[in-house]
Image 1: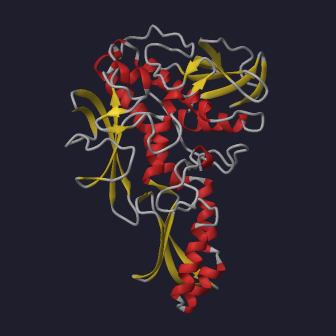
Image 2 (image 1 turned 180 degrees about the horizontal axis):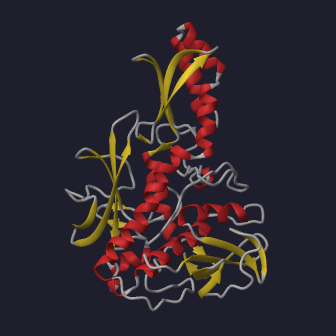
Image 3 (image 1 turned 60 degrees about the vertical axis):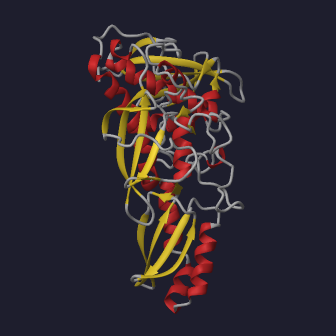
Length: 403
């Protein structure tokens, strides 16, 4: 799951247990060197600083209502304060291209601009959630539950105390599981874990070919989701079950009374573009996640592709600001960024490629501008980042096609 050690602070419900706050699995990462066990799907289009400042609020310092989103009350580091080389990882690049990308001469995005920006950011926020269900790490955790003999035998014997012991052992056994409940039919045998959990998964428990029970588990809590969103996206977020806000730190509180699925919404005199999607709370039931995207001035004058690709470019910078880059995790970092941006990423020292989405990669890459590669035209962004072997340059290539 995405770098467990990004968030080492324990949750209040289990102070002696590692928080799953930064767990993000992947449809792509299988092992982190420094970020061990991270299989992820996390994209972090951080449109924090500039986006927020342009809209009259600071998404980086997190003043959205009474919640400090960008300053990450729920965690111990500030996404908005991370720097990748000389670039502010927290600043939105829309229209500014701090990473070096040239603005194209495509026609202006116009009225579609707010939705393009919100769709780009919202898509990432949604993948942060869905990654909890699809990751290779989650599959491993499910397998561990389904093959844990002390649990299976205890259920078969009807020993409720032993079931509780086995479930507790699984939750506290350095897996990614944050909550696990076990049932036989409709009878609850054990339920161990935190209070506010999302992305539940259900399965069957069998012993010697006979079904003995069922389980519901999750590898992510609401606090963890909000921390990841804050750290890598930086936009205010609201979690609701029905008309009620989920009572956890880091959220916009109380938030707009009504938030559309897509479209403009005003909160405390600031206009946002909303992106909402349906999730699931534990053990069942709907959970609505809404991201409030601040709109920078002059957004409509930018080409749609620039809006999208500039935001995608920020992600790589924010992620690199969270990691201690080394040769051992260069490729992991590349995979992590590529998974959600659908872009190509290359880590180079001068002309030497240290890691990349393809090998050998483009022969030459400009610091900014465009490049033709394998018959496609890409917009190129780049920035410098510190690593254990000195300063490296990270190149990001995104499709130059209009959105």
